[in-house]
Length: 188
Ligand SMILES: Cc1cn([C@H]2C[C@H](O)[C@@H](COP(=O)(O)OP(=O)(O)OP(=O)(O)O)O2)c(=O)[nH]c1=O
Image 1 (cartoon, rainbow, N blue to C red):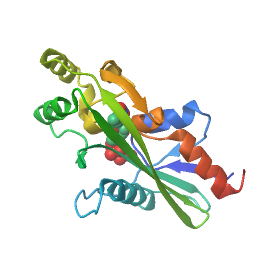
Image 2: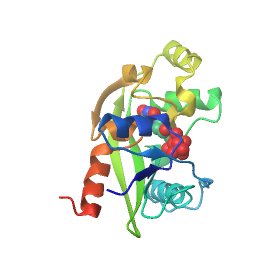
Image 3: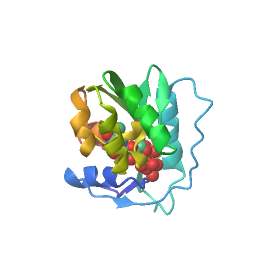
Image 4: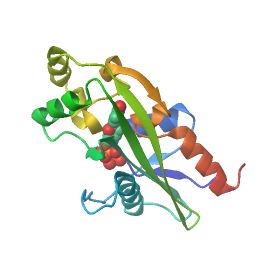
């Protein structure tokens, strides 16, 4: 199989691919994310994933490129990474005691084709007490994560249940990516 190049600086995405044994090389992308001008959150994450993949740097001839983008959607509003601690507090207060969606857009550039898809997981949050939000923010965990939490970290304490892919919430739906890779390569 031609080599796979992951155009993402997210430590979670490379860990997930490694966990399931998908060999890959991490590369940078020169893409700058505009976050306005899209018809829907799903259109937005797919466009961002494609932009990241198309602007990947240093891909050899025949290399397969993977780009991804993850957001939290609440009442049709997009929550990306928090700007600062006050923003993280606002996000966590809004997520408390209700459900939201986590949507990851994925783009695969493979054999001259652009395969773009998304995956959506519904996440149900418990009620968060103010002291819990404050200690969570003080831990620093929310700051580089969409929706200001990490289900793979301390954020696991706030999750009552999920419907859909767990790895999608962490940043890359590896089972879905694997299926699309197999399909595109004619492997199954
Ligand atoms: C909801 C949630 C998000 N996240 C993370 C996954 C993504 O890394 C991040 C969303 O930011 P992204 O912009 O999707 O990705 P990134 O900036 O980390 O990496 P790159 O643009 O280089 O690909 O939020 C978690 O780690 N756990 C969670 O539970």
